[in-house]
Structures are given as structure tokens and as C-alpha cells.
Image (cartoon, rainbow, N blue to C red; front, top):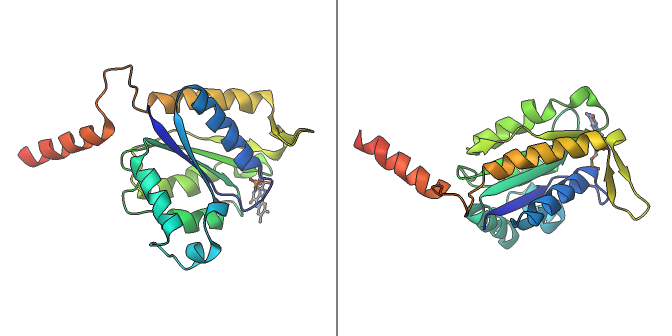
Length: 198
Ligand SMILES: Cc1cc2nc3c(=O)[nH]c(=O)nc-3n(C[C@H](O)[C@H](O)[C@H](O)COP(=O)(O)O)c2cc1C
């Protein structure tokens, strides 16, 4: 079964971007995909700010990412970019950490004015981590994401449809045990060997 790490980059305790991420994780789990969830609260602030690469919690993230087939990362838009706290965490991932991964970015913002923040700010960071494939993400405004009386995040119909569409594309880039498909790790090795033998 494919495994996906989810990473929530909001410092807020009640977070719309994390709520959106939770919706995505629930939909992926319903397709039999194993979810390994991480939030900023899983890491001591000191380890993030002072870049403690060897901290056991950071090592646990490294291991989970290394063993996963995909990453779904969610962030609030802060000052026309992603959250600084998320950057602290992404900075602690090893080089090429995402080279075998399909990656799906999710973001929420106060208005549509900064809907390109994911494309212009977050995607270059994911590309620097050598993400194998970045699926065009989902951006939601606070108006599209409201809190229900039970404390769960309610998605307006437009964003719910966009999320379904994007998840289908993301799943298509994960290894499928029912489909004859070369594992991305094996594919990478074959390409490397082929390049050397030319
Ligand atoms: C410090 C800060 C900066 C923000 N900057 C922006 C911004 O530049 N553009 C925008 O659309 N929304 C901005 N917002 C609004 C948040 O992106 C929005 O409310 C988002 O849904 C919060 O996500 P969260 O609940 O997951 O933290 C900002 C919010 C805060 C607290």
C-alpha cells in the first residue's frame, strides 16, 4: 500500500489549512493509502529554530518521509508566502528528500489576492528538495472554509470539488499495487544505471 506523509505548517491551534489537510487525509485513507501525519506541534520550537537535524523528532520525520511515496503539505499564506514555521521544518529535511515523492501542496489565505503564493513561493522550495512530481495544489480562502458547530471545517462546494479533482491526480502519481508499475525507487535506480552506461 502507498504511504503518504502529511505535514501541517500552521502555528494556529485551530487551523483552516490543517482542516483542509485533514479532509485530504481522510479521502486518501478511504482509498487504502496509509497516512503518517505530522504537525508543527510534533517538533520542539528549539529544534526548529536552531536547526537540530539530529533531534529524535526530526529524525522520525526524516525516516517517515524517506519511507513514504508522497507528501501532502499544507500552509497558511503569511505575508504573501508560506508560513515561516513551515520553512524552518522544510529546511531540516535532507537534500533530495522528495526525489521519490509525489507532492501535493495545499494553502489557505484571507483572500484570493495571494492565491499564487503556492506557485511562486512554496513550489520552488519543493522543487529544491527534488520533488519527483508536484501536483497543482489547492488554494482556499477563509470564506470558502468555515467552522461547523461540531468544530470541524466545512468546505464550500467549489473547493470540495477542486480538492477531489486534485486528489485523484495525486493518487495517480502514487505506486498502485493493482497496476503493473515500476516502483519510483527502482525507476530512479534504472535511470541512473542507464545514464552511466551510455
Ligand atoms: C501573520 C499573518 C499573515 C497573513 N498574511 C496573509 C497574506 O499575506 N495574504 C492572505 O491572503 N492572507 C494572509 N493571512 C490570513 C491567513 O492566511 C488565513 O487566515 C489562513 O486561512 C490561516 O490559516 P490557518 O488557519 O491554517 O493558520 C495572514 C494571517 C496571519 C496570522
